[in-house]
Length: 77
Image (tube, rainbow, N blue to C red):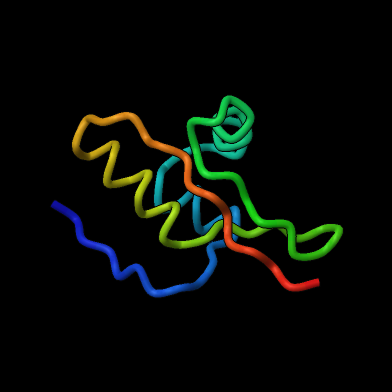
C-alpha cells in the first residue's frame, strides 16, 4: 500500500490531478458532490488542497472505503 507523509502543506489543482489521476472536471464534480476534500481559498484566484485531506481520500480509495469529510484547516485572514 502507498504511504504518504502527512506533514502539513498544500497541493495545487495540477498536483492533485496528477496524484489522483482525476481530471479537472472530475475533481470539481467530486468536490461539489462532497466525495473529495474541498480546496482552501487562499486568494481570490488561488485555491489549494490540504495534503493530509488528499492523502486520507487516497487511503480510503485504496481500502475500498467511502471518504469521510474532514474540517478544512483555518486560514488566517
